[in-house]
Length: 94
Image 1 (cartoon, helix red, strand yellow):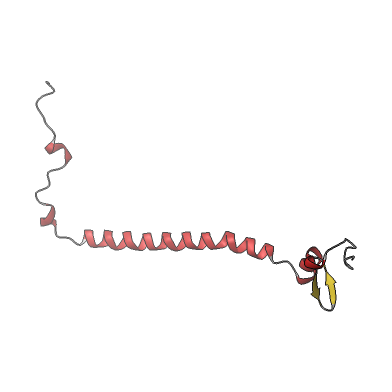
Image 2 (cartoon, rainbow, N blue to C red):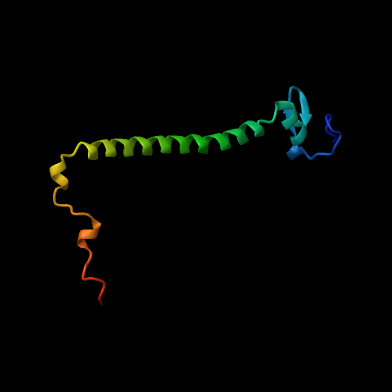
């Protein structure tokens, strides 16, 4: 049997009926409008949307954390003497 669209041979398992015609899989994809480009666009856009949403959540989290830390009273940090105060300062001798 020949495909009326491309005149290639096909077997009975490889044929599909579309609008009263029996077409091979290649011609059937062409007749129904292959959506592979739309699916490729979706597979590209979806991860970008997820990344943007994750970045927005991280920005919100760290903004709230920074705002909360800036509102702490200065008495909370009173005992902190800085990183140099806790190192040994014996004049450089070992």
